[in-house]
Length: 281
Image 1 (cartoon, rainbow, N blue to C red):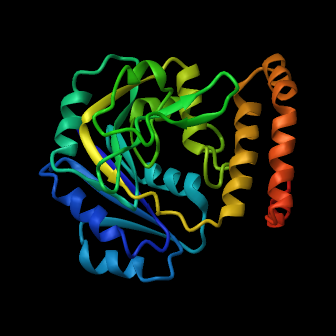
Image 2 (cartoon, one colour):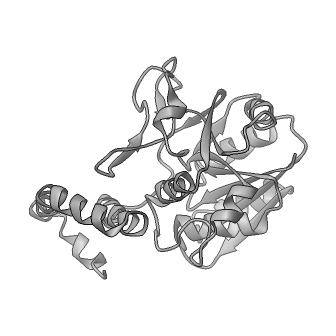
């Protein structure tokens, strides 16, 4: 079974070495490593070229965002499975071997695998997958809980967190839209929730692999706080527009409109008026 590892970088010079070293220290030969760089200016591209001859580097002339960069990596890959990684993720020894054991024993409906993603210190959970509520809000399951926490993860999540997520080629090909595997209208944030929700609606399910442990610092993005909050607000609405029918959308908007309006006004009053520059929708 061939595995394609797709890593996103954007000014990631402080973290990419640790990520790539952990990937090549896995002892699994049937893999290819693709780094997609979104116009780094801190020497990331040059560092990868100089030190990792086995890495295929895709250099973008501008910051194309997470969705498009992930799609570029997937398009360039040939594996039966794709591992999406952020550049600030470090894999524990045997991460890939444990994945292989899990992947070879999957049910036919399992198109995604969620590894055990811990924080950088390894003491708390960063993500055990994406939980989607009845009001279509989302969060990382078990975030901040002790690393020993697990529970009935697979019954609670719709898909994996793309900071470290396994996707089957078969599932990705079945879900590809005109806007890509990941919807490229989601420049950054919520793109993994949208893909997971589409997969869930199509009958695909996620397997949790607690033995595949990795560590995520959560510092891989340089997007400023105003942009993050706006994009999360905007992308959640786009995701609902795409994936819910009219009646459910109407009910959802009526129920959540006061909260959403108050949230938006709070951002403006707090001085984060830069959000307005993104309002093109």
